[in-house]
Image (cartoon, rainbow, N blue to C red):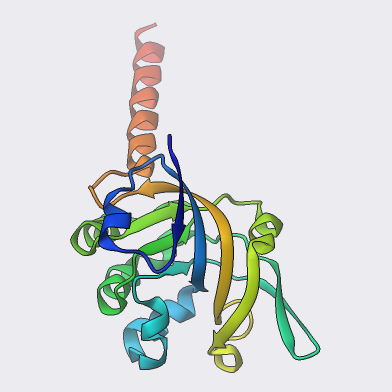
Length: 198
């Protein structure tokens, strides 16, 4: 298992060099996005976010933000479950040229195909580490759709340093989530066979 330090935006070579199990410390600009953000990106295709998302990262997260003296700060930034965005994400990757999706729980086959086609990866972020992830945020650069969506659903543009993740779906068609699911299924079948034969 390798640890790689990567600076956003990411090139095709950056992505091609990543494989499932690699640890990645990500630095640069990431954008948070949940259900409302993904629908907005697909339905409205807003031009104002294109430059920020191009070759960049979207983080499935509803952060806890605090405004003090007209400045926003990030107090907690744990990942949310990614599979909810499965209906949208392949379109978002294609439309905006994303290189990274960050979240927890993995994605489905439609997203896996998009990762291969468009040279992108899914990076697993650890649940329960919201304060650790918030500590990697150096600054809040911008926020989109705050008034329309509210704090958790808005698209927060965050500058991070050494944001810790693990590659769990790569652009080569490999998925740790699929591997774990298969091993679990095989173990369950084996246990049931032993139970019924004993």
